[in-house]
Amino acid sequence: EGGGRGGERVGAGSQGGGVGVEEAGAGRAGGGLRGAQGDGTTSGEVALRAGSGVLAIEAVSGDVDIAATDASDMFVRTVSGDVEIRAASLHSLQATTTSGDLKVAGDLAGPGPFAIETVSGDALLAPAADVRIEMTSVSGDLSSDLGTRADSGRGRRTVVVGTGGPSLTYRSMSGDLHVVRPMPVPPRLDARPVPPEPPAPPAQPASDESHQHSAGRADQ
Image 1 (cartoon, helix red, strand yellow):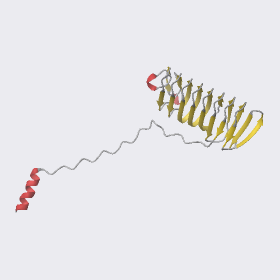
Image 2 (cartoon, helix red, strand yellow):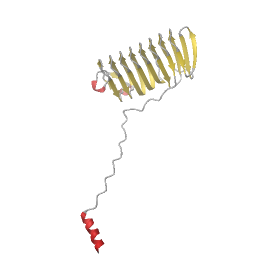
Image 3 (cartoon, one colour):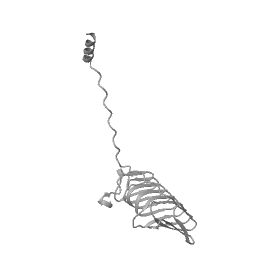
Image 4 (spheres, helix red, strand yellow):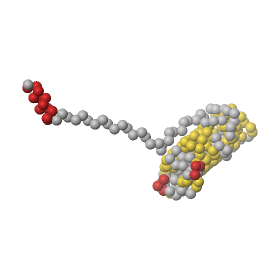
């Protein structure tokens, strides 16, 4: 078990909650999760929705998809699986993959560290606020739709978005990094829908006695 923000705890190894299960070939999904969470998989996919707190995910070939609407610290490691992270606020981020691709969108608002590492996988970063991105790569390229790019030496490149803000490091052998505008985080999936209004009861048919009274008045 681990302690998360707000004193809430989520126990690793809870099969029913889809969190902290180590099992080959099975996918996992969780929603509305809080506190410290961990998940490990060999080839299954991992999906977390509306999570917050400390998230630690490790996978070999399974893809990882995380959407967090509250402040989170994330540690994600894969070998060949792709990783997609959408977070309202990231206090720290450590994302590592060998050949999988990485997509990260959110506000880097905490003390860090913020680091992305790949061997040959590409990365797409969509920062929601100011940030300084420092890239070290042998043959990878850095492109940006935001901020100003500067080359500071062989294999070293920098992009400054806004006034700079926190620093994110990207290290790769041959993977490319593309910086784009952020996308909104999906709405919380644990919110209960408003129930529909019940239908109006059908009109009651007139009784036989009423019909007889109406017919009698008509005869008179």
